[in-house]
Image 1 (cartoon, rainbow, N blue to C red):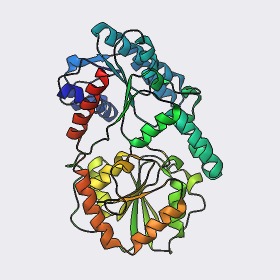
Image 2 (cartoon, rainbow, N blue to C red):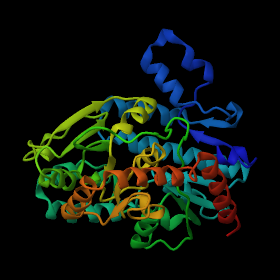
Image 3 (cartoon, rainbow, N blue to C red):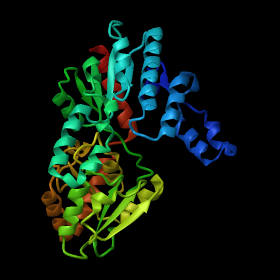
Image 4 (cartoon, rainbow, N blue to C red):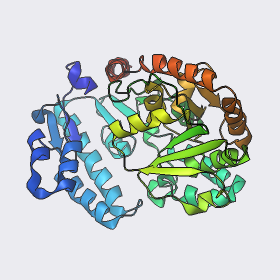
Length: 385
């Protein structure tokens, strides 16, 4: 959409794209309507879309298979990558490719002279594997959670070499940039942080009135997101002084929560973005103490609602959160650090509300329009390198 907005889009290569009318066609059921809605972008002309039928068929196979390391998924990525390379070569256009499937296309373009730009969605895979292995040794109770992460799958291979083939990289956080440098990336890396819908995630005007400190957690409760550290910190607070609200669309991993049954937990599942935005306004803060995030969109979403966020330097928050000014920023992997901030919050709730107001002001700088503008600037710089 950034390229389209600035008149630079040659083609979007994907496995499936649906006209707007398909999402309004009820006869095929709600699942199809959701798929059609997700596979349409307002403002993107259909004649700019190139699809790979073979990749789509393999993608369907991976859905039926259900495994994160499904061979169908790996095959779908390679087929889509090859299709993108064919389109770039035929049209003599620069190629931007997601890190999931960039490498085959980049290799096919290696002698073409066409710019190859990597969009690094998550921190680099080898960096994450090394991190998860160390984390599993430190927190054995969370080893199973970490082993379920996609990067631990053999389908990812021993190393992700996409960055080595790229002429430039665009990513969403300094933490992701650091992961690429750790793996040996030599290409220039441009950090372009994501945006937030300020209308959907509107600012609250009143402070939460609940007596216990209310802490929200958004997403799958996994050790990648610092689950055991957060639960340990909550359990160490005076009994009855704090409550955890878990906003998730997945089942709760009972191995991760074992031993923390004393914590008051409310589970809120399956909320739409609008319903989530309304509900998290009753939280004093949102916690995302991740050990690794490519960015962490929920950080900006909560901030836009005027809810301060407790997050780590291993997230996108490190690029715009100033500790105890517009959020709470800590080092990852520390129950004690989380407990310290929660204990401070217990006795500084008025100040915490003011931090939330400052968080909204910061979030207003991070619109999707600003993201597209900054992304296009990074793209122009990358194609001139």
